[in-house]
Amino acid sequence: MRKTVAGVLAAAFVLSMVPGVSVAAREPRSTPDGSVAWDSLRWGPCPEEASSPRLECSTLDVPLDYRKPDGRKIEIAVSRLPSEKPSRRRGVLLTNPGGPGGPGLDYPATLAGAGLPKRVLDSYDIVGMDPRGVGRSAPVTCDLTERQQARGAFAQYAHTPVDVVTESRYARTIAEQCATSRTAWMLPYTTTANTARDMDRLRVALGEPKVSYLGASYGSYLGAVYTTMFPQRSDRVVLDSNMSPDGYDYEAMRLFARGMADRFPDFAAFAAARPEYGLGSTPAQVRAKFFELVDRLDDKPVHGIDGTLLRGITLERLYSDALMPLLAEMWQALDENRPLPPAPSPPSGDMENLMSARLAVTCGDSRWPDSMWQYLGNVAVDRAKYPMLGGSTANIGPCAFWPDERQEPPVHIGDRGPSNVLMVQNERDPGTPLVGARKLRRAFGQRATMVTADQGGHVIYPFGANTCAKDAVTTYLTTGDRPEHDLACAAEKGE
Image (cartoon, rainbow, N blue to C red):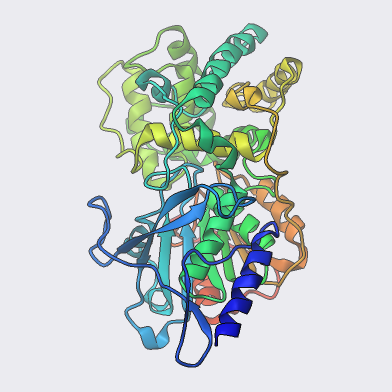
């Protein structure tokens, strides 16, 4: 038995030196049958903000730098919603709600509350985590002021070249704040690849030879990176609302403008059919009202909202059909200079941390252009092609001033590995447009099958309305059966 344990420890040391391969987070112990197991996580009550009494929480120590596995450690907060039918339990379903920067500790409870089918809840322990740098997992900060936070995620809309130059000064300031904050030591290691390594550490700590995965939006890229780095450790992988295989780079930021162009006609038709909003009686008139409002607010902000912020709020509320009435009411209030209606609840978590972690990952994963001329040219192109948002999303941001050095190149998503990926995608997704999802589908090759839904909005499972697409995910997670070929789901009544 001693020889067995020593052999495992030696193998673990060798594996820890291989990029993308992780070892257990706790000390090994021998089992009665002579094999070696790892101490399980110590589960207990979750923080008060957790949304379900059934949710259990724990922590996991992982290396800050996986090239130095015995060096500095950080603590990752993890959670699980245990299966209520242990006899039917298949394994573990790791989850991620997107971001980057979004906390995921209470996401298992959110999924259950949103109608995750009982067959899935019975089949898996649903596991969540705050990714490194986020929430309760060594949170990063850029010391963003309230005014900087209120500016939102997008750069100011650039109407002229001077606007790009002006924005560059602001972007440099934010980058310098991140580089000099009290958590600057975390920035080189707050990357998607390291979060994927943390996920594999969690897999080992859970005692699972493989894990299944459900990730949405940025979580689709995280899942793609995980199953690329650890192809034999991933079981059933579901990627929802998919990014391109290059992740959250500058081109992904520019794609938001394409997403808004794809999705806006749905809202224009909605508003035109409801004369009580006074936004126009045809989709063309609703579109004209948008430009009238943003131009007016650029000249004179109302209630703290300028043209750029209205563009961003409009995109955000195009994420769900349920938010369209709120968007129409807001436009109406701004048009008539009345008090704004109540806004939806903000996302859970610390907004400063969410925005800082988003910067850390997006700027740390890949190099962004540092040529002012490139931004000037791209802004001119996108402003003409996608006038609703292109002058903002193509504009310069803090990543242009991030240090050039990277710990490692971005993970290359390819077709090597088991055929175990199911992608689901709305055709008119404003946040992760179909054009990017198709690039990821091509990159995966034989590894993936994609289900598209003739629907607008962001995230399908289990929140969306298209039962065809949702049923495909449930069937795959519970039986392992995927559509034999890529599947197109028709629009359903009521969508």
